[in-house]
Length: 379
Image 1 (cartoon, rainbow, N blue to C red):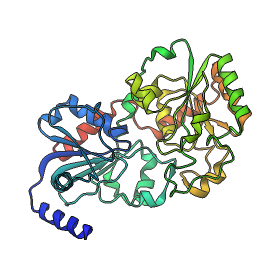
Image 2: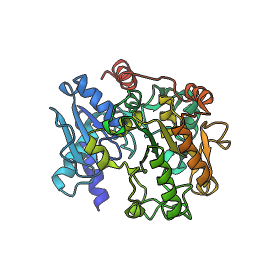
Image 3: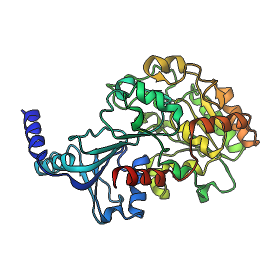
Image 4: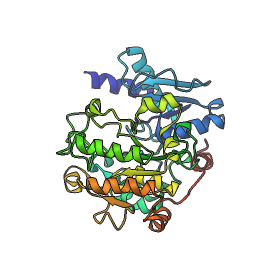
């Protein structure tokens, strides 16, 4: 019955003319490339011509931008009047700009631009195949064009090598007072145990859910090396990672850089990345973005066989394509930390080649997307 009512409402609103409305979506809400492009739109005063609507998954906090002609609505609000209003917006908005939880076109003459939430290093085929009809989808370079035509079934002329708007932030060196006179490494593992228990997780042995760390003793040894070398290690977990293990982690030089940490400092994730000296990651799309900093990258791949059981990896031959200092055990993790302390960067030249391969541009990402929309879709 609910589905029938929804279809009836959609059919009624499909008779209404399109409005000068731009829909934005991201997960987490108001984040990532969607937020970067949205804020650029505000700088360009796009909201003077268009109504800008964020479709949210959770209640909007007070610190979202409160600008003229900018509105926030829950996608699945329980209030019947809000449900009808959201249905109206989805059916009559002229532009849809989504990045993670797909917002499909209701009508052929709507314009939908998919920003994505990163270039594929790992991916889930079933999610990619659900992309739906788009008028444009952003990629960082033509290296990824084949993936989006073959897996996402996008047409070649819809694939736009314009770069990702969020990378404007990572390319601008941001100063954080707390990091002054210290070496800072950010560790961004992708999730091993999804917070949604319905989604299959990795069968890891570490109770901390982190690669290359097997027990509390190793965690304490890592902390000792960090303190002795005056290095901060910022642990930034994937948004869907189960973080229950962190109740046991209380260490001086290992900082849980969660959303509250960023909010307290008044910064965004990619501001944080720009202020670091090195990164540790694994199968995360942030690898491609961090290449823009020219800083060392450590890659933990000790669980790659288990990871491949659950996810698809973009390259079969990872080490010859994803360039960095590979870390496959705890001792190698400690050595990477020491290398950063001593200024060693053993993969710099090869990373420069990888950067040119995976990033077509190194600046002005929001501006490039904005101008494309103006020139091709009359924004």
